Every structure is written in structure tokens, then in C-alpha cells.
Length: 76
Length: 330
Image (cartoon, rainbow over all chains, first blue to last red):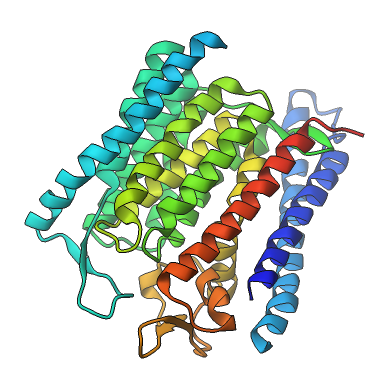
């Protein structure tokens, strides 16, 4: 049982690091121009939407992973 | 650097001894007032007093005020106010049963002092890949972080000594990480959290003489979250807290709504005849960290606690590796 939990922890850690890479490479360069003083606000909204989508994807992957690891563990 | 040694030692000693010395009289006081609950994992009718939050917050406030006297940092004031607000929220919940949404919403409000004092840097730092500027999104992160860390620690407060023992490991790991990323002042500010948790663990460990209650667990969790924000180590802090995050994630993904534990009908864990803990087959019960630990077979309360501590040490090591990776870039 415990090995599954350690594996799940490690998988979460890898997902956090990979997610960080995606956030920095995807969200970092986003900058909007042409809306004057609203530029920062619009770019922030776009970043927020992308971040929320990424978090949802992260949770879905984690759920799948959880089912995969623990279904096997509970059976053993 | 050398001028920081004296306030560091003084605040750590104060944090430890304030909790160590105030908890026994608090236990006596709570016993007198008959503020005790049944320890559900003991065969006999063992009553344990609660909440231990008042001694925990006393240790935190006194030690952080000492540090403020030396360092004069707004970050310390933000931590003190946010943590005290979290204690108050927990204490209200200890005395009067509140709805499932009360704590997350109230803790989100408790995060506001961090914003008001400007005790944050809106650049979010990731290992290997560097930082990303998210000024508006970061404000939302602050508002979400305190309820998440507060409730996450509260959710693992299910067995004798687990919440305080887990916080000892997680907070000292965070302090080491802050030293690695060379944020020395916040590393010093974070140390009292570990010493307060350590002193409380003395009375909370199996067999518990006192439970932290919501006031204690939320105080520890909110302070941890506040340190993560003011120290700019949000990702590292999340890694060190992973076993507790897993517990909340498993609970929420099986219950599929924000709800108080006491409102959940199904029992995830039951007892064997010799009162060891065993996972149930109840399909309506939420999946929790303890239930998964017990999926391999029954264990004593102490063994489950040790399994959680081993997971905490593992994620503490991952957090330290993450801190070293902060300095690495492609």
C-alpha cells in the first residue's frame, strides 16, 4: 500500500514541475498591446483563464493516476 | 548574518517554551470546564480535552513579536495578523458548529492582511524553468492559499499526534528550503512554527492529552501558508505539504463537494476487535489518506501515524530537492 502512496507523491511532484514548465513557457511570454491602460488587465485575464484550464487538466490527470495506482493497490 | 543569530535563538526558545509551559494549565482549565471529546480510536471511553489552539497561538504571537522587535518587517506583521485571524475562525468553529463553507470563506478573508501589508512578490517561482509574472492572478493565489493550507492541515488532524507531528516535519523542511533559496530572514521567521508544533506534539502524541481542535489546526496551516507567500516559496511549500494535499484531494474527489467531515455519512475507517484501524468497504465513505494506508491491512493508530510521518519526510526531501532546483536553469 505504502509504495503506491510514495509513487503517487512522486507523480504529483513530477506533475508540479512539468506544470511549472508549461506555466512559465506558456503564460510568461503573453503580453497584450493596443488596449492602452487595459493591456495588463486583459493579459492578466487571459493568463488566469489559461491557468485555470491547466489546473483542471492537472486535476484530471491526477484523478486518472489515482485510479490507476490505487485500484491495483487495493486489489493486492 | 551574525546579528540574526540572537533573535533566532530567542524566538525559537520562546516559541517552544510558551507552548510547552502553557499547555498543561490549558489542559487543566479545559478539564474543569468539561470541554472534552471522546477519542474515537481508543477501546476504553477516553475523553480528551480540546482545543489546544490558545497555547499554539500564544507561542506564535510572542515569538513573532520578538522577531518583529529585531527585524521590523511588514511580513512578520502580516503573518501575525493572518495567523491570529485563522485562530479566531477556528475557535469560533470549535465552540459553535459552523457550515462547510464558513472556514474556506473566512480564511480567504484572513489572507487580506498579506495583501494590505504588501508582504508578497507577485512573481511565481518554479524550479528549473524560472519565474512568471502574474500580478492579478497572484492576488487570487494569496486568497486561495490560506484556506487551502488551513483546511489541509485540519483535514489530517484525525489521529493522535498526526497534525502537530506532520507540521513539525513540513515546517522544518520549509525552513531548510528557505535557507537554500537564501531567503534568510523569512527562514528565521518560519522557525517558530516548527518549534511551536514540536512543543505541542509533546502533549498531542499518542495517547493525546489534548487535541488542537480547529483553532490549533487552522492556526498551524494558515501560518504555513502565510510563510509560503511572504517567502516566495509557494511551490516548495506545496511539495512539502503533499501528503496532506493528497488527503484533501482524495476526500474532495470522492465526495465531490466542499463539506465538513462530520457531515459525511459513510465511515472510511473502522476498528477490528482488538481496536486496530481497518479500511471499510463502504462505497459511500470518502477515500482518505488513512483509508489508503489501511487498504493493505489493519494497523494500530501509532503505525498509521508513523506511515503518515514517513510520507511527510519523503515530501520534505522532495521539497529540499525542489529548493535546490530553483537555482538551476536551462
